[in-house]
Length: 268
Image (cartoon, rainbow, N blue to C red; front, side, top):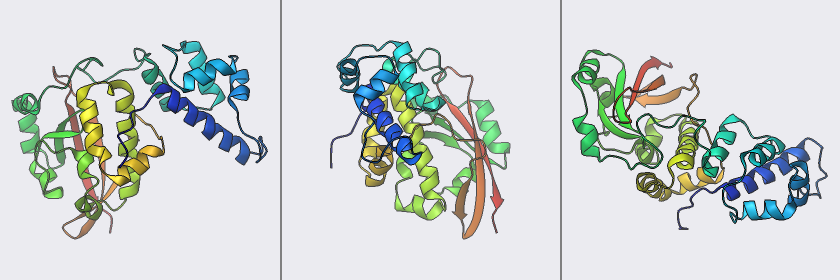
Protein backbone atom coordinates (compact mmCIF):
# COMPACT_ATOMS: atom_id res chain seq x y z
CA UNK A 1 0.00 0.00 0.00
CA UNK A 2 1.37 3.40 -0.94
CA UNK A 3 1.84 6.10 1.69
CA UNK A 4 -1.13 8.42 2.40
CA UNK A 5 -1.28 11.17 -0.19
CA UNK A 6 -1.75 14.66 1.18
CA UNK A 7 -3.30 17.23 -1.16
CA UNK A 8 -1.11 20.03 -2.50
CA UNK A 9 -1.92 23.05 -4.64
CA UNK A 10 0.49 22.07 -7.39
CA UNK A 11 -0.79 18.52 -7.66
CA UNK A 12 -4.39 19.69 -7.83
CA UNK A 13 -3.71 22.35 -10.48
CA UNK A 14 -1.93 19.72 -12.58
CA UNK A 15 -5.03 17.52 -12.26
CA UNK A 16 -7.30 20.39 -13.36
CA UNK A 17 -5.10 21.04 -16.39
CA UNK A 18 -5.22 17.39 -17.41
CA UNK A 19 -8.99 17.30 -16.91
CA UNK A 20 -9.37 20.40 -19.07
CA UNK A 21 -7.33 18.65 -21.73
CA UNK A 22 -9.84 15.77 -21.78
CA UNK A 23 -12.78 18.20 -21.81
CA UNK A 24 -11.41 20.02 -24.84
CA UNK A 25 -10.77 16.78 -26.68
CA UNK A 26 -14.32 15.56 -26.05
CA UNK A 27 -15.69 18.93 -27.18
CA UNK A 28 -13.63 18.82 -30.37
CA UNK A 29 -11.56 21.81 -29.28
CA UNK A 30 -8.29 19.89 -29.08
CA UNK A 31 -7.07 17.18 -31.49
CA UNK A 32 -6.74 13.72 -30.00
CA UNK A 33 -2.97 13.75 -30.59
CA UNK A 34 -2.45 17.10 -28.85
CA UNK A 35 -2.09 17.97 -25.17
CA UNK A 36 -2.98 21.01 -23.13
CA UNK A 37 0.67 21.69 -22.41
CA UNK A 38 1.94 23.88 -19.61
CA UNK A 39 3.06 26.34 -22.29
CA UNK A 40 -0.47 26.69 -23.72
CA UNK A 41 -2.17 26.78 -20.32
CA UNK A 42 0.30 29.35 -19.06
CA UNK A 43 -0.24 31.56 -22.10
CA UNK A 44 -4.02 31.49 -21.54
CA UNK A 45 -3.51 32.44 -17.89
CA UNK A 46 -0.99 35.17 -18.84
CA UNK A 47 1.92 33.67 -16.95
CA UNK A 48 5.13 32.00 -18.07
CA UNK A 49 5.41 28.27 -18.61
CA UNK A 50 8.40 28.11 -16.29
CA UNK A 51 6.36 29.69 -13.49
CA UNK A 52 3.45 27.27 -14.03
CA UNK A 53 5.92 24.39 -13.93
CA UNK A 54 7.18 25.58 -10.55
CA UNK A 55 3.62 26.01 -9.29
CA UNK A 56 2.65 22.47 -10.31
CA UNK A 57 5.78 21.14 -8.60
CA UNK A 58 4.95 23.08 -5.42
CA UNK A 59 8.20 25.00 -5.72
CA UNK A 60 6.57 28.42 -5.25
CA UNK A 61 5.56 30.13 -2.00
CA UNK A 62 2.08 31.61 -1.86
CA UNK A 63 0.78 32.02 -5.41
CA UNK A 64 -0.94 35.32 -6.18
CA UNK A 65 -4.71 34.90 -5.91
CA UNK A 66 -5.20 36.68 -9.24
CA UNK A 67 -3.05 34.06 -10.99
CA UNK A 68 -5.01 31.31 -9.28
CA UNK A 69 -8.29 32.82 -10.49
CA UNK A 70 -6.98 32.93 -14.07
CA UNK A 71 -5.87 29.31 -13.87
CA UNK A 72 -9.19 28.22 -12.34
CA UNK A 73 -11.05 30.01 -15.13
CA UNK A 74 -8.82 28.45 -17.79
CA UNK A 75 -9.50 25.01 -16.34
CA UNK A 76 -13.27 25.57 -15.92
CA UNK A 77 -13.12 24.93 -12.16
CA UNK A 78 -16.49 25.07 -10.39
CA UNK A 79 -17.11 26.99 -7.17
CA UNK A 80 -16.20 24.12 -4.85
CA UNK A 81 -13.00 23.52 -6.80
CA UNK A 82 -12.15 27.21 -6.65
CA UNK A 83 -12.69 27.21 -2.89
CA UNK A 84 -10.44 24.16 -2.63
CA UNK A 85 -7.73 25.92 -4.63
CA UNK A 86 -8.00 28.88 -2.25
CA UNK A 87 -7.74 26.61 0.78
CA UNK A 88 -4.68 24.82 -0.59
CA UNK A 89 -3.05 28.15 -1.44
CA UNK A 90 -3.67 29.62 2.01
CA UNK A 91 -6.44 32.03 0.94
CA UNK A 92 -9.11 30.48 3.15
CA UNK A 93 -10.43 33.65 4.78
CA UNK A 94 -13.22 34.50 2.25
CA UNK A 95 -14.81 31.11 2.89
CA UNK A 96 -16.21 29.98 6.25
CA UNK A 97 -14.55 27.11 8.03
CA UNK A 98 -15.96 25.01 10.82
CA UNK A 99 -17.65 27.08 13.50
CA UNK A 100 -15.46 27.35 16.57
CA UNK A 101 -12.44 25.73 14.88
CA UNK A 102 -9.68 27.90 13.50
CA UNK A 103 -7.55 26.27 10.79
CA UNK A 104 -4.55 26.31 13.15
CA UNK A 105 -6.34 24.65 16.08
CA UNK A 106 -6.16 21.01 17.03
CA UNK A 107 -9.31 18.99 17.64
CA UNK A 108 -10.41 18.63 21.27
CA UNK A 109 -10.38 15.00 22.51
CA UNK A 110 -13.52 12.90 22.25
CA UNK A 111 -14.08 13.14 26.00
CA UNK A 112 -14.49 16.91 25.69
CA UNK A 113 -17.20 16.43 23.08
CA UNK A 114 -18.98 13.77 25.13
CA UNK A 115 -19.05 16.06 28.15
CA UNK A 116 -20.49 18.86 26.00
CA UNK A 117 -23.80 17.06 25.31
CA UNK A 118 -26.23 19.56 26.81
CA UNK A 119 -29.70 19.05 28.37
CA UNK A 120 -31.25 20.69 25.29
CA UNK A 121 -29.47 18.22 23.01
CA UNK A 122 -30.59 15.31 25.18
CA UNK A 123 -34.19 16.56 25.19
CA UNK A 124 -34.24 16.71 21.40
CA UNK A 125 -32.90 13.17 21.15
CA UNK A 126 -35.50 11.90 23.65
CA UNK A 127 -38.50 13.62 22.06
CA UNK A 128 -37.73 13.23 18.35
CA UNK A 129 -39.05 10.37 16.25
CA UNK A 130 -36.57 11.31 13.52
CA UNK A 131 -32.95 10.18 13.49
CA UNK A 132 -31.03 12.75 15.54
CA UNK A 133 -27.27 12.68 16.00
CA UNK A 134 -24.41 14.97 16.92
CA UNK A 135 -20.87 14.58 15.69
CA UNK A 136 -17.43 16.18 15.57
CA UNK A 137 -16.02 17.64 12.32
CA UNK A 138 -14.11 14.50 11.36
CA UNK A 139 -17.49 12.73 11.28
CA UNK A 140 -16.95 11.17 14.69
CA UNK A 141 -20.21 10.33 16.45
CA UNK A 142 -20.82 12.07 19.77
CA UNK A 143 -24.39 11.09 20.63
CA UNK A 144 -27.56 9.85 18.92
CA UNK A 145 -31.14 8.88 19.74
CA UNK A 146 -32.90 5.52 19.66
CA UNK A 147 -34.22 5.96 16.11
CA UNK A 148 -30.66 6.48 14.91
CA UNK A 149 -29.33 3.40 16.71
CA UNK A 150 -32.24 1.31 15.44
CA UNK A 151 -31.15 2.24 11.91
CA UNK A 152 -27.41 1.84 12.57
CA UNK A 153 -27.28 -0.67 15.45
CA UNK A 154 -23.49 -1.08 15.55
CA UNK A 155 -22.74 2.64 15.78
CA UNK A 156 -21.52 3.92 19.14
CA UNK A 157 -20.14 7.27 20.37
CA UNK A 158 -16.60 7.65 19.14
CA UNK A 159 -17.09 5.79 15.84
CA UNK A 160 -15.65 7.44 12.73
CA UNK A 161 -18.65 7.30 10.41
CA UNK A 162 -16.61 7.69 7.23
CA UNK A 163 -14.43 4.79 8.34
CA UNK A 164 -17.54 2.69 8.96
CA UNK A 165 -18.66 3.47 5.40
CA UNK A 166 -15.95 1.18 4.05
CA UNK A 167 -17.01 -1.88 6.07
CA UNK A 168 -18.98 -4.81 4.72
CA UNK A 169 -21.83 -3.88 7.04
CA UNK A 170 -22.08 -0.45 5.43
CA UNK A 171 -22.33 -2.03 1.99
CA UNK A 172 -25.23 -4.16 3.22
CA UNK A 173 -27.05 -1.22 4.81
CA UNK A 174 -26.41 1.43 2.14
CA UNK A 175 -28.17 0.51 -1.10
CA UNK A 176 -26.66 3.41 -3.06
CA UNK A 177 -23.29 2.90 -1.40
CA UNK A 178 -21.13 4.13 -4.29
CA UNK A 179 -22.95 7.45 -4.61
CA UNK A 180 -23.04 8.15 -0.87
CA UNK A 181 -19.44 7.22 -0.21
CA UNK A 182 -18.18 9.14 -3.25
CA UNK A 183 -19.76 12.26 -1.80
CA UNK A 184 -18.30 11.51 1.62
CA UNK A 185 -14.78 11.24 0.19
CA UNK A 186 -15.30 14.48 -1.74
CA UNK A 187 -16.30 16.26 1.49
CA UNK A 188 -13.28 14.74 3.23
CA UNK A 189 -11.07 16.21 0.48
CA UNK A 190 -12.56 19.64 1.12
CA UNK A 191 -11.85 19.27 4.83
CA UNK A 192 -8.25 18.29 4.07
CA UNK A 193 -7.83 21.39 1.93
CA UNK A 194 -8.50 23.63 4.92
CA UNK A 195 -7.31 21.53 7.86
CA UNK A 196 -4.95 18.99 6.31
CA UNK A 197 -1.92 20.33 8.13
CA UNK A 198 -3.43 19.53 11.56
CA UNK A 199 -2.84 16.28 13.39
CA UNK A 200 -6.56 15.52 13.81
CA UNK A 201 -7.17 15.79 10.06
CA UNK A 202 -4.05 13.74 9.32
CA UNK A 203 -5.25 11.04 11.71
CA UNK A 204 -8.64 10.86 9.95
CA UNK A 205 -6.89 10.66 6.60
CA UNK A 206 -4.61 7.84 7.74
CA UNK A 207 -7.55 5.87 9.08
CA UNK A 208 -9.36 6.13 5.75
CA UNK A 209 -6.28 5.49 3.62
CA UNK A 210 -6.18 1.85 4.70
CA UNK A 211 -9.24 1.11 2.53
CA UNK A 212 -8.58 0.44 -1.19
CA UNK A 213 -12.01 1.82 -2.10
CA UNK A 214 -11.21 5.07 -0.32
CA UNK A 215 -7.96 5.38 -2.28
CA UNK A 216 -9.82 4.72 -5.54
CA UNK A 217 -12.36 7.46 -4.83
CA UNK A 218 -9.69 9.81 -3.53
CA UNK A 219 -7.78 9.46 -6.80
CA UNK A 220 -10.82 10.83 -8.65
CA UNK A 221 -9.99 14.25 -7.11
CA UNK A 222 -13.68 15.17 -6.65
CA UNK A 223 -14.25 17.88 -4.03
CA UNK A 224 -17.41 19.31 -2.45
CA UNK A 225 -18.09 21.08 0.83
CA UNK A 226 -21.63 19.90 1.54
CA UNK A 227 -24.02 17.26 0.32
CA UNK A 228 -26.85 18.57 -1.89
CA UNK A 229 -30.08 19.13 0.02
CA UNK A 230 -31.81 16.72 -2.38
CA UNK A 231 -29.32 13.95 -1.62
CA UNK A 232 -31.01 10.73 -0.49
CA UNK A 233 -29.41 7.74 1.16
CA UNK A 234 -31.18 4.46 0.36
CA UNK A 235 -30.97 2.03 3.25
CA UNK A 236 -31.80 -1.54 4.17
CA UNK A 237 -33.24 -1.43 7.69
CA UNK A 238 -34.62 -4.59 9.30
CA UNK A 239 -35.29 -6.12 5.89
CA UNK A 240 -37.10 -3.07 4.49
CA UNK A 241 -35.93 -0.39 2.07
CA UNK A 242 -36.00 3.28 3.01
CA UNK A 243 -34.91 6.64 1.64
CA UNK A 244 -33.40 9.14 4.05
CA UNK A 245 -32.40 12.78 3.70
CA UNK A 246 -30.17 14.09 6.48
CA UNK A 247 -30.13 17.79 7.27
CA UNK A 248 -26.97 19.04 8.96
CA UNK A 249 -26.45 22.26 10.91
CA UNK A 250 -23.34 23.69 12.49
CA UNK A 251 -24.41 24.38 16.05
CA UNK A 252 -23.89 27.66 17.88
CA UNK A 253 -21.58 26.08 20.41
CA UNK A 254 -18.13 26.68 21.82
CA UNK A 255 -17.16 23.36 20.24
CA UNK A 256 -17.42 22.56 16.50
CA UNK A 257 -20.42 20.25 16.86
CA UNK A 258 -22.69 19.37 13.93
CA UNK A 259 -26.33 18.47 14.50
CA UNK A 260 -27.89 16.02 12.07
CA UNK A 261 -31.55 15.11 11.68
CA UNK A 262 -33.15 12.74 9.20
CA UNK A 263 -36.37 10.83 8.53
CA UNK A 264 -36.89 7.44 6.92
CA UNK A 265 -39.35 7.17 4.04
CA UNK A 266 -40.35 3.71 2.72
CA UNK A 267 -39.09 3.01 -0.78
CA UNK A 268 -41.33 0.01 -1.45
